[in-house]
Amino acid sequence: MSMLRFGVEIYFLLMALVLFFLTLRQQPRAAADYRVALILSAGGVLVALLFLGQQGELFFRSYRVDLFSQIFKLALALGLFLVLTISRNLPSIEERNHAEFYLFLTTCTIGMMMLVSAVELLTIYVALELSSYSLYILVPLRRGDDIDVEAGAKYLFFGAVSSCFMLFGLSYIFGATHSTYLADIIHRMPELVASPIGVVGLTLAMAGFFFKLSIFPFHFWAPDVYQGGAHQVVTFIATASKAAAVALLIRLAILGSQYGYHFTQILVLLSILSMTLGNLVAIIQKDLKRMLAYSSIAHAGYVLIGILTLQETGLASSIYYALAYLVMNFTVFMVLTQVAQDGRDLKIAELAGLYHRSPLLSMSLILGIFALAGVPPSIGFTGKLFLFTSAMNQGYFWLVLIGAVNGTLSLYFYLRVVYAAYFVDAKLPPIHLSPPMRALNYALCATILYFGVAPNSIMELARAAVRAVL
Image (cartoon, rainbow, N blue to C red; front, side):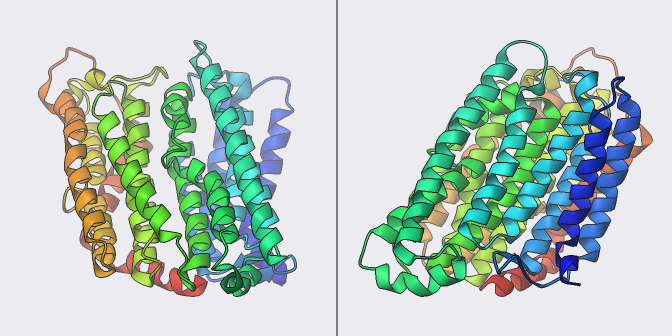
């Protein structure tokens, strides 16, 4: 019965095994492989829902299953399913590699699911590397010019460096506390408050997680990888992997919440730098994916506002915003894949006339963009409101003010996208959407609006998840 707590991971391991056997065929059958992957991923969402209430510990207390981890596993399963819904057409990936594409997306999801349940340092490291190496393979799969190889090389290089920093920090924490279990580290941290070793170790360990969130100064990989990777791969990096990084960051931030050592000051500085740099550099971008890359850096700064409060409301707000970001960012990337169906990189100016080409896609785009900008009554506005309110209650007035100013700055480059889609004419053929894709557009638009107006159900679930960790 205890292995039922590992049920979600077991399902996705079996899914990866099925996809592995599909990669062994000598003659590629892309359409059949896609149907298998999509059906199995939909089943994964149902399994994650069924196992939402599982609780307990596994593998000598190194793996904790609770509401907090299960919520993020459901989000990761949903993220994988959503990415596969837009992966029927993979023009930038060779047909013989389609099965490998589905396989490594699945193994990356498994790694991130293990990451959100890991409560032991070596387990965290192994799970993080499993998810990372899958992405290192996926990014260079894009065919075309050499930008994909360059992006893959940069991603691998920065990932390896951040892993070294993280492993070095974990060794400091182990050397200081003589344990790799987070529960033991929490109890032994008071002895090291006067010593810098705890702060240095945790800061170095956080380097690996800041890399995942593309927080300053570990953000340099994001623009090139976003531009160089296939649209579907970048969509997965921009949505699911961010949710997993937020989950782990919350778990580790709680390490310092009980003793209040100088970790929050680091988060305040990184939050300000990430928001400001991301929004300022995004203003001058002409490529849509590069703009979204710098936007993700800014949004990582917003998430840190909730985490640094180290209080239930702030942490719950970060969970809400991570889930909201998954939905609203996926919506924009979904529009990108439908407009650039040949897999090319899309300039913002190439969105011209989208309203006439596909009113439904243009509606999804404007709702996704306004949600990212924090315009009411979207889910993004409600998420920012929760984050800023929780920070204000903890006395971070100047941080909230800087966040609000950055939100205003972001309106400029977000409105450029809306202007191109609605107010610039272009004589281009209409975009025809299949019935499932039209249904996906309606579902995403409804989600952005409904949970922006009625966020209580998600927020209460997030509060319950935080209480399970605290």
